[in-house]
Image (cartoon, rainbow, N blue to C red; front, side, top):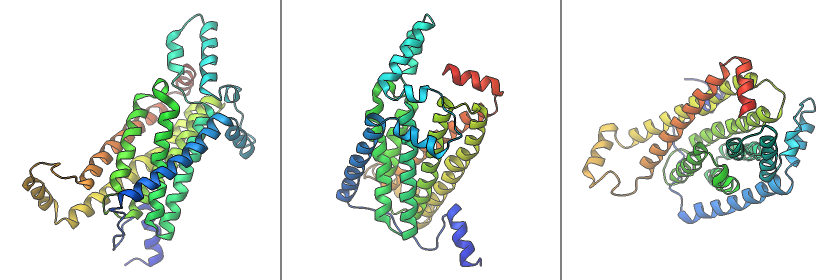
Length: 314
């Protein structure tokens, strides 16, 4: 038997515990209250940082990292309308191109990319603190803040700038979180999953910002991002998913017992099975993360000049 200190350290990577601290089912009114409060907070902070004071986060980043050299566009393209104007001028200079303008309009501003870092950092901190103090209620507010960002970002981007993969993520992620509130999954596993997903979200938002506005080699950024993304968005989430599924099958009397219970019902969704819905949504999200991990790996392995040329064109 491993010493308790070693078990505690290992549980950070593989959150398996002898006893379960169920996250739910949580009352619907508590879930709605958390979503309302966190959406209001996220919308207020997001609107201020991306619309009213769009250079604040950029200036803060420069103060934190004085050696970082940014392109002038970081301050010029601070609002979606500014991005459109800048793109229109570029198209006029090049003698083209409505297609270029259509594509560029889908890009986030520098402030929006850095707000991703701020938001995901806040969720990571809340989830970590909830795990530390053993509070499923605090964990619910951390997860609600994740849903809040999906709502705010959908409004902020609008259909004109929202890419298909962004739309899919904004739909699937809230489904995963809302379904989890009605399951008896151990909240510590969910906290670890949230920490991995959102901390990698911090790195992803920062990487996108640096790719567009810094002079750092795109190949170097993709190589470092691939390592972090593979661990935090693929390896650890798949471990957590396996833990959740195996525990659920074990507590329900085994795989055949669960399949038999479904066969006895009048249909697979004769009554709402939140755990089953959670499994399906997590499967989609995991597949989504694996796909993007492969995309990042492919770009990380391209020759440096090819990656640099691709980033300039897109």
